[in-house]
Length: 111
Length: 114
Image (tube, rainbow over the protein chains, first blue to last red):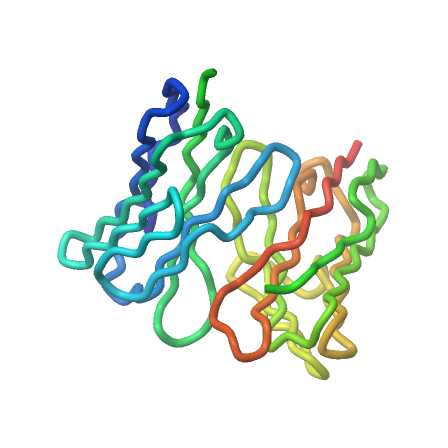
């Protein structure tokens, strides 16, 4: 069993809809949680960075962390075709900088 | 954040040869890392590039296959040695800028081994 599980998709939504992404994990030592966006043939781009449980909002993006359930989510409001990409969750423990990634979810926003 | 560049952006190499990938950052960074992303897969950490000392490798990766240098706080190289088709991947450099906790990635080097 992988430490971080993420549905590979593809997740197809109409433009303007809310995109809901999530990851589950098994290691309770994870304290920092990130979401990256990766366009085809590009490097991952950091979208959200959160520590421990709670919510964080940045523009159209909201990240949620529920450590008791070992579950994290990313919501994208008012989705645009330019949001079509692969979204990767990543997490790490308090000590060190090693990131453990989910497998990524491919998202397609249709005009 | 930091501006990260990698060279080459892509290459096609013959089996048995070696390729050195460069990573350059526009500012001093605390940590530098090398990741591999195999086709259709997520990212796997190869090693942490330590400034002035030997890199720290993750399980399954060895120095003879992936020698790494980091001569200063803004530059690192990863060499993929004695390549086989199984080494065909995207190789990514990442950094943690000084005074920050977030990790940022370079554009990647797409390697195809024939």
